[in-house]
Length: 354
Ligand SMILES: Nc1ncnc2c1ncn2[C@@H]1O[C@H](COP(=O)(O)OP(=O)(O)OP(=O)(O)O)[C@@H](O)[C@H]1O
Ligand SMILES: [Mg+2]
Image (cartoon, rainbow, N blue to C red; front, side):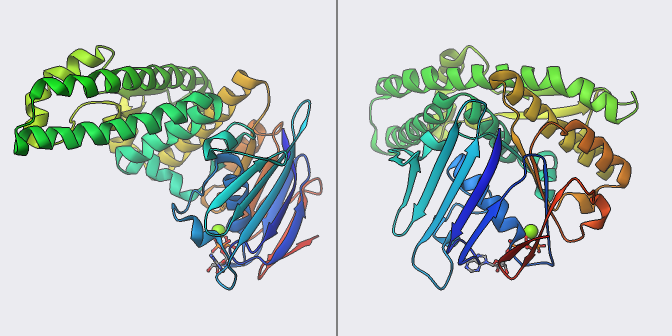
């Protein structure tokens, strides 16, 4: 699939702008703070229903204005998709002009894989960053997943409240079972999805990584779950502990994964360069999993990614995404310039096609 056009109104620093993309490689360049990442963010919002930079939708509205709109038109194998996003007091989405009831309905209408310099946090930061990576990938491909996740979180919150009520208000312990059964039902499904998708990633990432490292590095991802598939049993085993603590200590909300290179965890032993290459392999694997699942290549968004890579790595990356639509932002286009690529210059929220 590819994105044909995006129209922005009062989005971030933009007032009214339109940008038409090429099916292949698009390079958006300009000085710092001109509006390059904002373009990728608008595509992300229309694909996943929220920003990758903020949870506060209001921040997306131009500071001088009181509403914001985005329209994104994309072309899939057999049809066009039109997504409209509007935000005033609340946010609203339209899919092919039909209002969508839930934000989650947007997910899976367009497929994207975003690369940003912050992705290194998937390796370096806390487990929530890794769960987020999994959640984004899985929810694009399994529309039910996002609903399961939000149901799970709601039920978890209720269980945690009840745990405290047992401890402080003497509520009956046996009623906890009502929450346990529900949590176990939802949690087990999420566990199975994550397990399945980590396996899918493993199948793709091994060869990708071996290739980019001249057959030197064998990569493997290991799913870390503190509950496993005997969900209800393990949840209930921890009951007394949970009552003492006042929260649920085991479950998919504590999931994690570790990436190993030649049997060593990258987070501990990886060099900066190895970590960066690992992230690229991970995202490329994600892109390949999407292709395998739906038969469409996702749009690759590369935010300021080139500055981090040497020429050889850039070439290797491009080799892997040559069949995808690619939208790149950078401050300096020379490193990757090619007469076949479509170039745009952004200056203070004005886009000029070069
Ligand atoms: N709600 C908003 N209203 C008006 N301007 C905003 C809003 N949100 C962000 N901006 C401004 O938009 C400008 C461009 O942001 P953007 O992140 O797109 O920059 P960039 O071109 O990617 O720069 P860099 O090269 O530094 O990454 C910034 O100056 C930022 O302050
Ligand atoms: Mg930027």
